[in-house]
Amino acid sequence: MLFDTDIFIWVQRGNKKAANLMQKSNVRYLSIQTQMELLQCARDKPQHRYVKDFITTFGFSILPLTENIGHRASIYIEEYTLASGLRAGDAIIAATAVENNLTFVSSNAKHFRVIKDLDLKIFKP
Image (cartoon, rainbow, N blue to C red; front, side):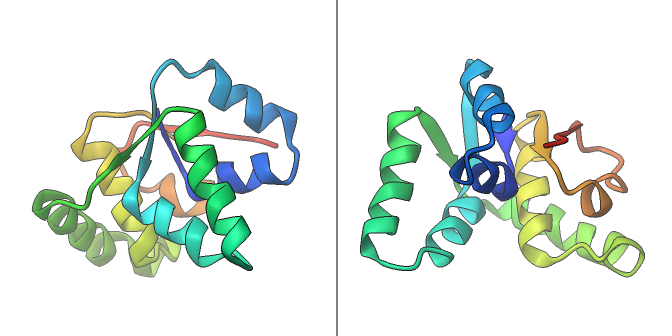
């Protein structure tokens, strides 16, 4: 299962439902885009360490940006941005899920529901 950035944020805010969802997943993935977003939002170096330690401790595999992911993300931008407000970072994360045949979990239904080839699981906090 590939987790969206918002799921990590729910866990950081103490949402037990989000934490249980991550714990129950046998295999945990995140996009390099998600890792960058989490680090970008950190307020200081200790929070950078916290993000990195969390990813390592819970056994997340970080999936890289590939040429195929970039190409698919650019198609998503062209097809869906005007209708749903899909942004580049979200397009990259969705494309990562599709290219790796993974279920994608997010609470952001508005941006992702329109992507037809995405196996989307909506998280409701």
